[in-house]
Length: 253
Image (cartoon, rainbow, N blue to C red; front, top):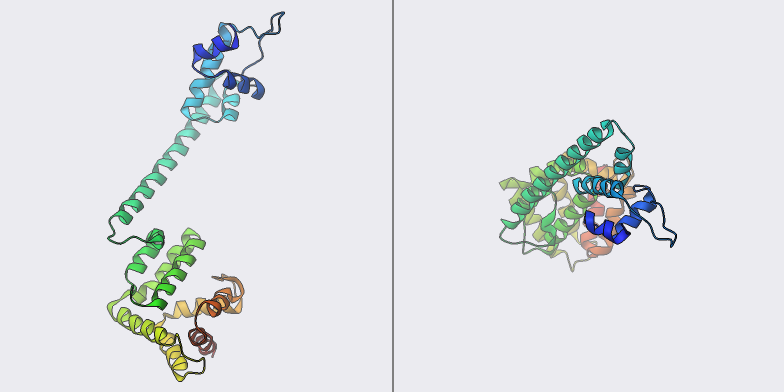
């Protein structure tokens, strides 16, 4: 058989056959006097075996190991590993579909809706809409959630959960409104210090400790060397940024 006939018999392309030759999965057959490869039945049997293993999902390197083992022990080991890998993929797909179902059930979807489930449950309990600073705060929380690891996301969401109680929610809405009122104010506005004190009293102790650690460069920073505070100074109005500078001074005292 010529290469085209072999490929057609097994149901692969001639390019695939050449690729298998290159990788050493299929030995080179004898060549005729005209230089063409001459394939025999044993080549078709081996090529069919490679195709079957590839269709199961084995990598070509794994197929090479399997074919080199005459006792078949390697095949069982590889297939068990493949089955475990597929089971893991199946579970991951199930969890992703559950998350997608939860997102599709929401009435209003926006780009930040696709945060982790833990953060999504927190954001649903925080004030939303009508406040520019509230929107900014939610964007920052979504950013932290995206850049953190899975365990850190859960822990961070738990830190925020006390802010989702009815009492905390009402107080948070009032704080957001007062922050919005400072958009055009001067940094030395007396309301700045008043609002900083209000926020210090509002935030959970664990959250305040985390903020201090990030600004002062302690272990487990949220953003190394307090970068979040510098970025807020560039994004917020001067008076709004000053609220957080005063807040950090209060927390250190």
